[in-house]
Length: 404
Ligand SMILES: *Cc1c(COP(=O)(O)O)cnc(C)c1O
Figure 1 (tube, rainbow, N blue to C red):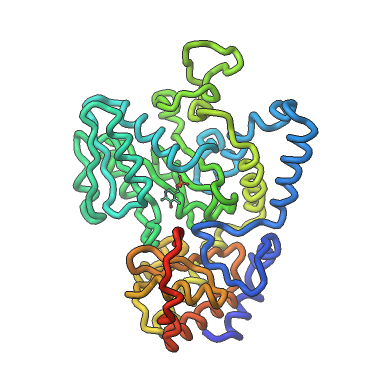
Figure 2 (figure 1 turned 60 degrees about the vertical axis):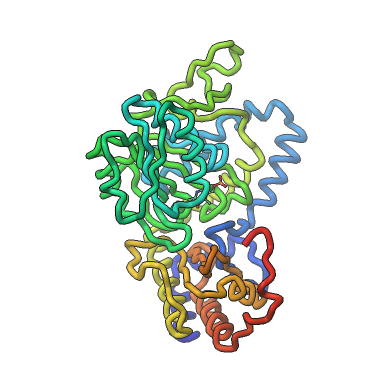
């Protein structure tokens, strides 16, 4: 690949116009959209409207002018990205809080099944929340096993298989159909964390008979820092599972102000407290971009961007820990390097923003909505230069900050 070839790919890219819908700073190649998605150009005005007009002028009247329906309305906008029906998804709270609600709910379904099975090295909050959730039921246990042993670890005491679809470090992607069926064959439910896959790879929850899912709003969905997350419950479970965070927004009649809790029908019961309207406003603006996106072109572009950086990494002699086959991968590429932290900082100093994942991973996110092939080619050239010149050895690049 050379610059002319990268530019030719950009000239033929059906998604090229989407880049103009994002506000990207000059001089930066942003390869961290899998951690914090970029700012859509429409978002500042939408936030100004939410604050200035909806809050400032309409005040409490805004609850009946669109606010109260926002969690369901945004859920319906996420549904097509995850292969769900509009009434199987709701938006609110964080991914961590939604994990807690669904893990405890699954554990309470059948008292003979008290175990959650998950992967060693899963995203930390998933395991931390599972640890807290199993402590909420009598004899609840968390069984953490290596990836290769998962299917065999699901047994007659397993209530739930908890997996992250695309691994945050390596970008390995589980076979959702096979593992969902493995859980069902053992009589267990499956909960998919889609944080690193929604907006990055094709997902068909209904098509593979998944039970439960959660996912993040601020990564490939570009909802902004700490954006509300989403939660999916297959229709067949919606009336059978109970939300342990049984708050008034999930009540059948919140404004009847009853002492006792009666869950709302459908997905509304998965709400807890008052929705975070400003965060929802930013996320909704970002979700509206997806109606103009050819998703098949998006998945194909992700693979093309990966190939460019994989070639640059090979040329620099960096071991790639991400699968080469796009069907088994998400939309980022990770390289192993003993001084990956300093390497990441040296790249950032040259305007190529990726991130570091402890202990030795340089992680570069490939967001096809707003990256061009030329951007990624230039990032690859910078990577080769930083490795060849060893500028990462500068002690200034070794100083650790709280967020890596
Ligand atoms: C980003 C991410 C989260 C984030 O959880 P928060 O509650 O938003 O902090 C959770 N799980 C996975 C797999 C993630 O990639």
